[in-house]
Image (cartoon, rainbow, N blue to C red; front, side):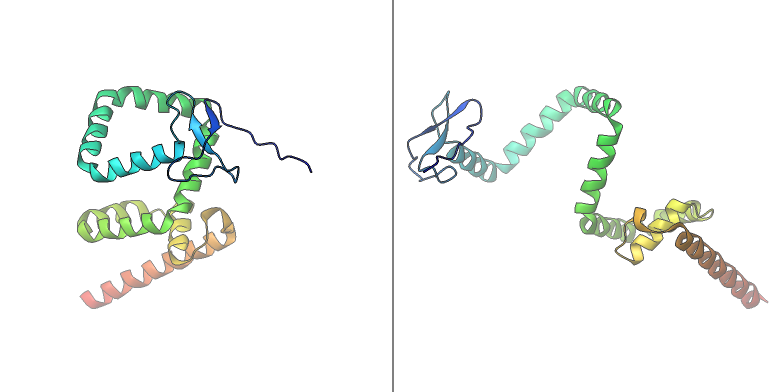
Length: 177
């Protein structure tokens, strides 16, 4: 019979099973902190309970912390970004596509509340129809990612949009006569 080697995280040890019966990886023991000797899972649950029972207090504490350390945090983020911009891009893309439905819903709500500003923004941005705008329009209609859209499809969609614009302009001119 061969024993399975289990790696224990630094600063922790396997101790007796805790009062809530948290069994770590089927060892029959609880993973505990070396300093306080408390079960890490019990500690996590206690922290969550405290947060949910004192949400306003915790949120206020977080706001104050960010207000005091905002510049430090921003400087650190700028430093990390400058060290590895590709990492930032990967993370941003991954986060965006993981939450795409939520992001789209927020955009829809904003557009409903701010129709005039949204219209002005669209008019300014969509006049020239750069590739990124056309790809965005295609992405909104389909569930494709921008990088998966072939360039010839982008050109075709741009031509279609420009044609529709011309048709609308001519109709307006005819109606005004």
